[in-house]
Length: 275
Image (cartoon, rainbow, N blue to C red; front, side, top):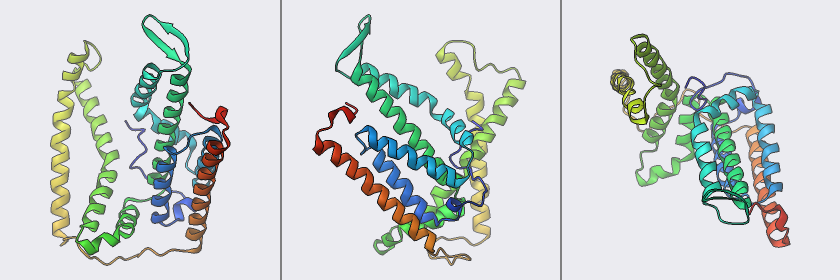
């Protein structure tokens, strides 16, 4: 749990760190959308090169990003198995009543790549953006909703606080687990139901400490006369030349991916399609 990267900030003086948070939020949104639009091998190759370039420019250790994938290992394996078992197509072999198809293997591989790239992309955003900058970026990006009385500032603050406390809760969970093991708790023996029940001594203290931390935070914010709404910024967000260049690269990336999809689909190059 200590290897979870989402919510952590990795201090570094890279070009990605210095970008406006609105640029990184837009880039993350573009990545998420394009991951589920891509339908050919060429586009996935371009996406791979793009992510590698962003990771290189961020100066975030690639091993740190890979360690963050441990948190979704179960979801990753579950998605692959489900796609392999439930996809019809050309049968390669079968085990009893279970049929393994070529289309299922390819679809499972594509789903795995999508999940891995999704985690890496969002991790880069949180690793290179402080919670305060992320909150300001969210508030600025959705500022147009203020005209319809939508609480943009409050929602942005809630999201930034949630991201900020993800690593704190993970650290607290690890401490409670070690304390319970020192008292003789066993979390690994027995059947699935018994192992689930054994986590109750972890969940109860974790909920209590989380509620206590939330109350302390609320008291601290009230003591500083925080009431939300329109607040001034000591360092207001301003676009610079590098942000314009980054937007240009992202729009070019969008056009390239969409163009590859259209080229493969309209051109009838079926061997490049996943299924």
